[in-house]
Length: 245
Image (cartoon, rainbow, N blue to C red; front, top):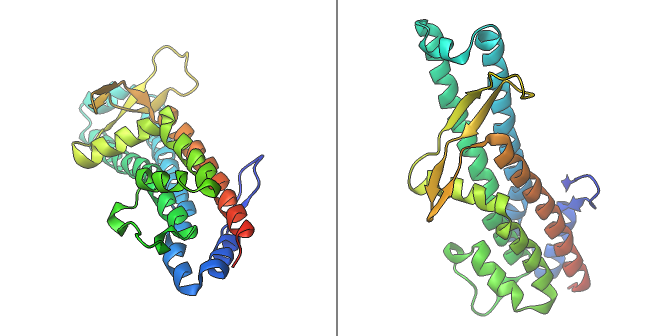
């Protein structure tokens, strides 16, 4: 498997697996491989859920909103149209929550992949599996000069405001209450898309998060996560090549 992005060197996960096995043995590769493989899979899942939201909106718009305003569809007395709207919102809520969770999961999955890929789990005092996270692994990596650069790239993603927004959404939905999407309609004609989904405003961790379009929240976080995976993957390979068995 090769993960490719424009203007970036592709990351060959097959090379990573080969290098991990050569450096630490087959048994350790079996421990590292699931996390390595899960990184692009999480991206695929996030993209699938996002594309499903777009497909659902397109279908609903064509069927119900081409000639009628949204308020009429919801409150115009046509029970069938209203029920279809309610089903749409359940489906979009499911997909948006799943997309957020997949993007948010990447930081901890990457921590597992790097932690095992670089052999830290073979240390005299390894972290218990339940304690392996972005925060704990970054702390370990920073104490190894050859691994500090990887820590900085991972930390940069976690510190980024767009990733923090996704983290707040994920944690709010996971631990407190679901942040439901709303369907917004533009009556001014000034917007390229007349209808768009938005995340409702919410509070988390003492911060206020205003209502924001799904695209403005998910697009930059997905792009950041994708580029970070490729960059960290290539750095992981470089470190393993420099320190062969």
